[in-house]
Length: 251
Ligand code: PGA
Image (tube, rainbow, N blue to C red; front, side):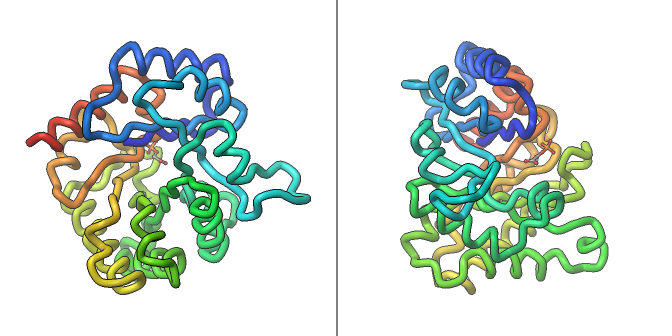
């Protein structure tokens, strides 16, 4: 269960949210819970969460470890402040910052090289869904990201299915749409990375997940968790989503 804080919260505000998540018990045995604050808040939020069950993740990384890349942040810098995971290829970067499939593939490899679990984001736009291209878009994005990765490396990753039309719009995918897309992604992983691997990678759903719609999504076996944006900024809402996941997990 991942909270993507996007470009919200200063370091002190992030620490306050981290404390609120801890005091409300936004964790559950058997469920990995993480938050992805903006870069300037990572260190302070990491310290606020240290020793607890909520992990620290980042929203992005540069493919290179160091160099003349003004404004960028690298994998070793993230591990040094305690990050364990990192989002790769979020649609707001693919579509807003022109991040190509090739760059996403390099970032995925950089994350693995620096002991960060990459959460590889894929998803179709509304126009692509309406043109019946969802399956081919997902296959292309997964194919480009995972090509020639070892079986071991593939299993050290997580995928997030995030239909672009559902992100920040309040328009959540139906449980069936999420299930079908997750199955397509598992199929693409099998074809790209090797037999049996489709089942070995956790797939999160992201796009307008909230406390009211999470249970229906988690009822689908193919939905292993969620990448939550807006609703992750409210500690009670996020805790309720974590609770839904652990109920589905137990059920
Ligand atoms: P949202 O964002 O929950 O605000 O739709 C999800 C995401 O972009 O990860």
